[in-house]
Length: 132
Image (cartoon, rainbow, N blue to C red; front, side):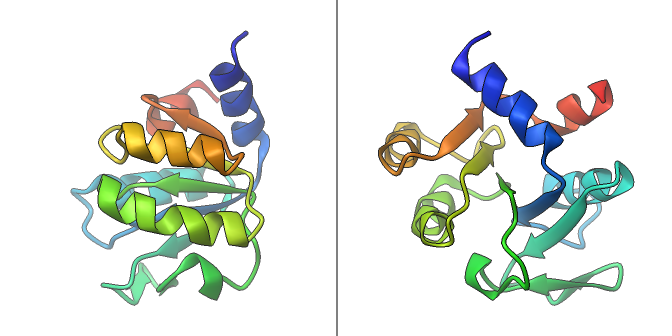
């Protein structure tokens, strides 16, 4: 089993997640991922400075504002926002980051690895949740 598969297995066992890019727009992956994690019994915090809530759940403007440290962060934003968020994730002491397709580029992966983060990319968390 390679490192990404190991990271994926470890992440799916973590029960407190943050979804950066969570949105109340039901057509977007930021909503679908947030909702599906909750439906599978995960405690999920949404992070998006553009909105205040999803279905009555408070959304937070940044990782630093979360009331508790998530064990895993799922990125559902463009690579520029992802890159800007990596420092916050690292400073918060979060080890695990899942990059949804389209949320990263080579620079993002290089920086995440340089920060010592345990990462998954190219895989979709929605697909993994269907296996659980």
